[in-house]
Length: 205
Length: 205
DNA sequence: CGAGACATGTAACCTGTTACATGATTCC
DNA sequence: GGAATCATGTAACAGGTTACATGTCTCG
Image 1 (spheres, each protein chain N blue to C red):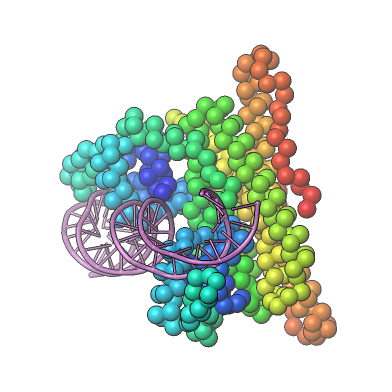
Image 2 (spheres, each protein chain N blue to C red; image 1 turned 60 degrees about the vertical axis):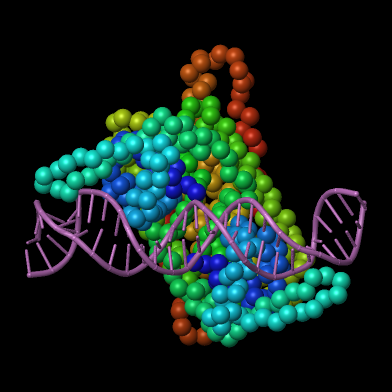
């Protein structure tokens, strides 16, 4: 159960409403974690019951009133303990629907497999473009409060970029292998002239 | 909800009891998916209610009686539809507790961060060793039924190996950066003489 | 005039975890 | 004698998803 820690983590940056937290999740955390609004509101109330956060209402005339949450010292202790706690080696990938699919993909015909791999490649490219955009944003925001936090978040973006690039390279190799086999099967028959390779992300950071 | 599809996937290989499925998960799927026994038994009953699988009891004198499940044609259709269905690009990483931790790791002191990164590196090494052992096993089993399925499962192992190696390289770089900064801070003071670098997995496949 | 941002929540349901219960056989 | 393997399950609870409900202000 890491939602509570994700909430504590963002509240440690600054105090926020449930709505703000949702936006923060969508903007900068959605690759590592996500949550629906109703789950966020429910969990915030639970965190308040256990003294990890506290809240107060702010009345607004132009916009709906809001409840602003802030982290307590106990909440910060809980957060840091969680960051320090280690994850067992068997959970390196935990649950990953794409890897699970790959485990069974040999059931399908080569042409279908090719399509699925190309989709994945496109999605990885989109993700990599997203990381690149965020990295540019970081270069501009930097030097605010929390410089250390931001520095590590930037390094994290570099990391996921490398990880996704490695996956892209693997998938491109699989597609090339498939194409060679498909070409051999129909013995230089009509159809695709040559592997289009679907330009993946450029490996240069 | 992919547990149902993981169950259908393994039952498509051969008929099995809930217990067999649990073992199969632990042995070859635990990096991509996992489930507790009670969850497996519950889900199997639901799959039977919806006609995706069927079961029959086998009486045994030496061991407890068992209920053997097999997939139905509807189950196979459902399975293949799921494999074909695509995953949105925003879910490339979905929920990942380690990446979430990294997002907040800047809260801790450099020495603590170093320890966490080293732990991760050790875990990645263990995972990579596991993949290597599995790949050797595959070379020996191969050429049974399901040659296509096994071929893709082997390529999957190569893939996760590459992905984890990329992550290891990133983390090693972070540790080196940290060490340089720590050394600079204490201005060639006592303590560690030089970065031990914690020999990561060898990049050669 | 409609869409979207702002803002919080309930209810019902599904998914996942943990603890408990049972009991024979086999191996050390 | 005790642990591991084989084998299936229930009950209670926690975590997560989806649909629904409400209402104002602002911008195009």
